[in-house]
Image 1 (cartoon, protein in one colour):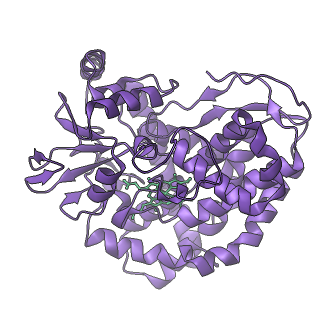
Image 2 (image 1 turned 135 degrees about the vertical axis):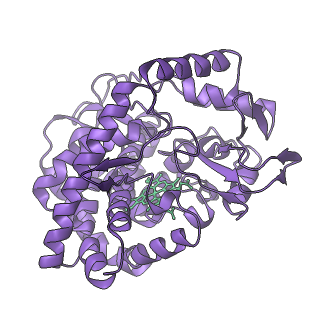
Length: 423
Ligand code: HEM
């Protein structure tokens, strides 16, 4: 485990490189609440494959991001390999499973294929269609609870996805509140652990999560219901505890820590573009295009990383085995060679779906369809219920460079004219 002094040295090194204009360090060292998009444009101005002194390449090109994601000569690595988070925790002789690091998101074929297949049936278009009515009910129930002034994130944008994923997994209602805390702790560290305190919080969260999921698994073994955990324990009895805990945890955290930001980023985009509010509140089809454009212009997941498993050529650059390539998904979504007038927020844009907000290739987000439904219903119904929704104070951003969204977004339901102050 790293000492406090090692964390300090790492932070100082990365900040130093960032000051020298290094693109990789620039992403890692930028204050999480700062608008990252101007920095991405600086990287774009340097080219399609920009070398970092930290031993990595960075690409803002949509074409290169897409081709790397679909190229089986590139792999995902565990955090250990990426020297980001040194974690293999053991308690009472049993491995404490990290729901991100040990999950199929971080695995390569054949393990990735085997594990992804187990949960795929819950995300088919048919399965999602069957869920749509219950998502509408969840959205309406939460809207009914809102008063004149509320925090969009705490009282709506996080509540809806948490309820949806809890129902899907079979997590009892009373456990939902704790997810928001675990989710924030995990999300904060997805782009690396930068302090001893962060590492301690992360360990505490992972241990709590393991204890929680072990109890749920036992319950569902005794009394199976119609949910993912019951399906895994009854239909795939040979699944190891590690795979079961990690797969469930990945769905749980990926299922709400991202969609909450889609909804809050959508509310912000509506405030910035008031002409979109009326059609958004009137037309479910417009809401679908609106969500797609939010995903393109302000995606909840800003980047991902891949490692070549052999020496290879990429866009004229010779990449040695193991050299990380940072794929700047959020910058790729603004690539002017693909998206005309890329900074314009246009919910009727015909090729918005070419964005890479859900990645591509074998790790393409399994929950893309679900979050599209959640996002468009949530935003449509929110503005239908509150057509004069307006900002009611400064927006606080999440403390993560990888995950972009609001932490607090205070609003008033009935005020038409208030200025928006985004920190
Ligand atoms: C707006 C919402 C969402 C966004 C922006 C998002 C984004 C992403 C991205 C970018 C990846 C791939 C990362 C990479 O290639 O390295 C991913 C993977 C994944 N997402 Fe999502 N996601 C969202 C919602 C969801 C939901 C609702 C669920 C589940 C209910 C989910 C489950 C997963 C899983 C299981 C993976 C791993 C797929 C694999 O490795 O095969 N996501 N997501």
